[in-house]
Length: 157
Image 1 (spheres, rainbow, N blue to C red):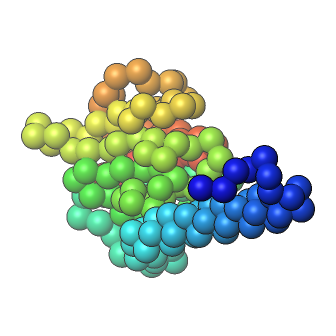
Image 2: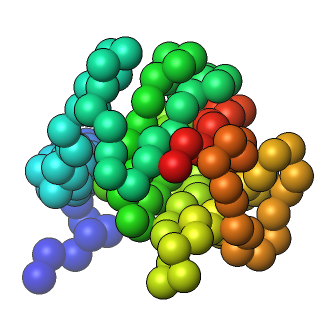
Image 3: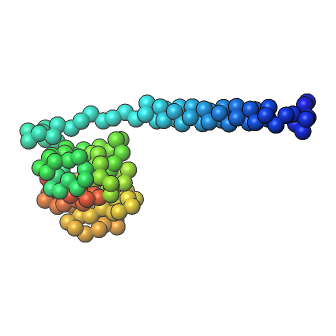
């Protein structure tokens, strides 16, 4: 094994530069690998028809009252499922792409008794029903508004 003290300073500098460049490229390779893996795992949900004649859900709809910063349109009808998640993630039933909405922000579901309930899914900024912040699952009726981030949606069931 060579003695590092006997190596000329220039050779040592070249070795250190090569090692640094190798580590830099290795880091970039890892970043690209992880990013491409995450992108390939994300399967975007099909876009919902946002026109006035949008297909109605058998369970009901959410009508956009105030879109906030989300890419929603006032009056847009979003179909409900028996268990509907709302938030910024693509994996949610309804994506609300607002800066103040969490990844999974709110859950709207129908229970065995036939009533609809809204619950906050541990969001940072909270969920509001008719302008009041909820802290526990809350029963909702047709005409109630649900606030997620800056967006406001009216329930029609």
